Image (cartoon, rainbow, N blue to C red; front, side, top):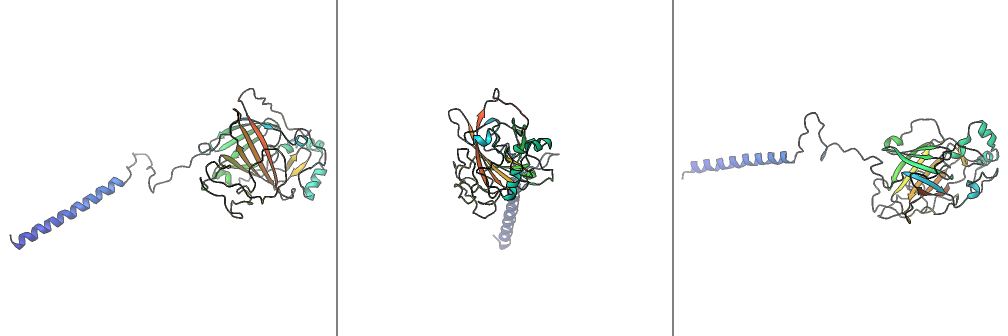
Length: 322
């Protein structure tokens, strides 16, 4: 066989191999590409595509708080079941400005000024002996209604809730809600370090308090108590609802005029308890920080019991100063 013929055969084989490799590579590329969207439709998100919409607060709920609840008053009867005597602020440490407001309390003036609901604001409503009806107003808003005082709280989730809308102050203020543990904590995570954004002792951050007490006693406690370990499966913060409220009107912590100011920040943790003998309970831990009228954070816990949806004693009553 001549050298020319061998050269021709070798060149043909090399060209064929090159063409086959090019075609095979193109087929692989098309096989990995996502299918084209039908006419008139936006392309579907895939690897590197547009992210899917985040789930709503309702869809990502870690606990179900809907239904009717009743506040169980097992402690503090003398402050909660009757209006305390004028000037009584037992267990609450007031600044001189706060003490002046307390001493000037006049229920007749509150009635004349249309301020009968000063003791039913966000700083006190979870403490009152009341029934609550919890529903979803929409997929990102929990509605908390009370029969005593006929108050309505809107607990708002998501980015829009984080933006101040400049609205007028109200008794219930603006409440931003998040499920605990928050995204990024995950199972097996740990609480942020003290002093860090969202860490212990930082307003609006991880609660620098021990697990909620099961009694009802009010106490002005410091916020330097180490928090319970968090993050793992079964830790005592899983399934909690956290609510931070601002933009409130100045109100009363107790109906006898113990005050909190417009500068107050109210942080609440709604903790569902395991069902016991067919009954569900919930603990609401409230932390009130008010630089104007309180000498330090005021921490209380309030117990609630789940009620049936009918024949549950729901009895709406207007606000009263008496």
